[in-house]
Image (spheres, rainbow, N blue to C red):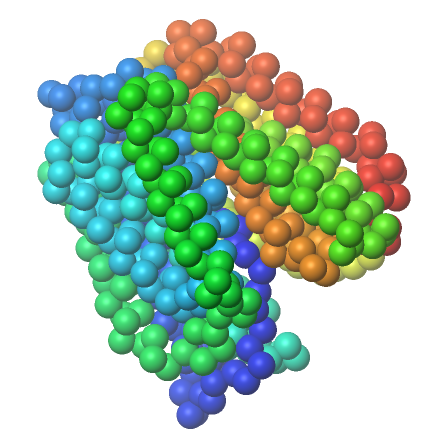
Amino acid sequence: MSDVDTGVQVGAEPPASNGKTFFGQPRQLANIFGVEAWERFSFYGMQGILLLYLFYPASQGGLGLPKDTATGIVGAYGGAVYLSTILGAWLADRILGSERVLFFSAVLIMFGHIALALIPGGAGVAVGLICIAIGSGGLKANATSIVGTLYSADDPRRDAGFSLFYLGINLGAFIGPLLTGLAQTTLGFHYGFGLAAIGMAIGLIQYSIGRKNLPKIASIVPNPLPASRRSRAIIIGIIAVLVVIVAVLTGLLNINNLVTVVIAVTLIAAIAYFAVILRSKRITKTERSRVLAFIPLFITSVAFWSLYQQQFTVVTLYSNSQLNRDLFGWQMPVSWVQSINPIFVIILSGVFAAIWTKLGKRQPVTPLKFAGGAIVMGIAFLLFIPFANGGAASTPLLALVGILLVFTIAELLISPVGLSISTKLAPEVYRTQMVALFFLSVALGTAISGQLASFYDPNNQVPYFGILGAIAIVVGLLLAVITPFVRRLMAGVR
């Protein structure tokens, strides 16, 4: 499972290697590689069994929540992770620096998994998911930035180093669901959550040992918050926490409307971000035009992620009830389905990079890549229709593997391209905020995926897969049609 990350900070004075390297890269890369791989191990390992834990009956070790409530919680949690990247980036830029935020985020993630493992019932879910969401947002927002400090701008090892880092992400995402799923099916859910906690603890320990060797620039606060404004920031933070507590205690915020609230907050944040940037007097006419060009890309990204992230909701429900998981007489854990996508990402990301490099200036412009991603994602949903409304074990495992391959192709047309174009279209003074906008599209789409899953009916699947697939295709086609107009707005950016 690939992840988008924030912009890369280039180290002004990369650390000396002292003759020691990590596959030809700065040896400090091993430290960041390790913490990210173990964090993804714990993150996707936990997420692979989370939905099952929420809706499985107590007799099977679960909480017995209604399926629409369970999928809403998963969607809200996923959206909150990407919302938290904005907080993590702000803390790094204004108060603590990337290295410290990464360290404290890893600690918070570990405690979140421990809470899921040890605290029974809804309390464990609430404490655990809040800690993991905030921690994962902080770690995602800063890991890539720290990797960037290991290289000078012209270091020829740079791209290979990031490819190796990306490999760590997907190795963790591949192995996590395999082991936690095995623990869940043989020992129980809390052992699966506990294994995720152990994985994060290993990552934290190895990072703690090596963090002193990271370049000093990783700890620098690039835009320190003036002392005169820190009190106001603290007060705002306290008020925000109190508002959430009051909303929960009064019932205004509950598990049934949580995903709706996350959608609303994310949408408001996105609109506010666009408004602040577009109304700024610090950007030029050309920069304003490029920000306007990002709006249809943002909308298409939301549509894509609202379907793609259903791997953790509808696809899990589908796999639990309809997928033939028999492997030579042994029943494969449901969570293992979550390990299929990372394998395809590892294999195909290099293929796509080679294709774009080979095509050079002849490759499709970014709006057409986005359009293609949405269309392919819609086709992936339509591919469920031949197997719709089937009974238990009616869908061959190979069929779902093929569908998830199409998921991955769509992902590689949007996820890495989206991060790249957000930096290219960004005004000089709002570069980080434009990356944050791309994260907001992921957050909004992820939260919507949880809301959409409430309409999934396992006994009448054709309308669900057909309508959502058709909508995604229409969104992609509309973007393709207006691509000439969008290109003009992009003012020379491809």
